[in-house]
Image (cartoon, rainbow, N blue to C red; front, side, top):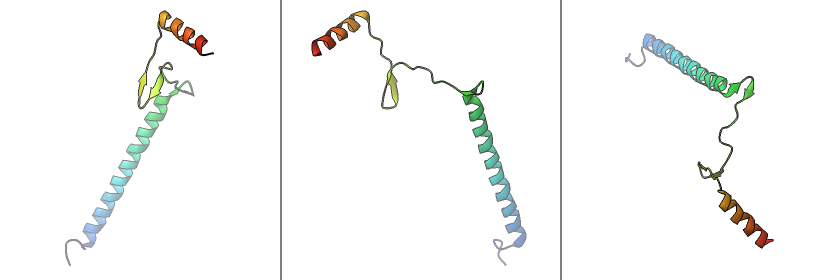
Length: 81
């Protein structure tokens, strides 16, 4: 009989694989639980920060108009109407 087919070896390998799978599953559950707890604040979902700006691709651009720019924009909108 070859080493591969040795019954004791296969049994130990099977037990090792079971322990490894169980450890990975526990690690994943722990990670998900930590993520879930992090998201909760007083039993409600955490609000996103930085509501201003608009989405372009994956980056968020923040825009703040100066009073002069606001006046020009308002004037341009009046001309369009």
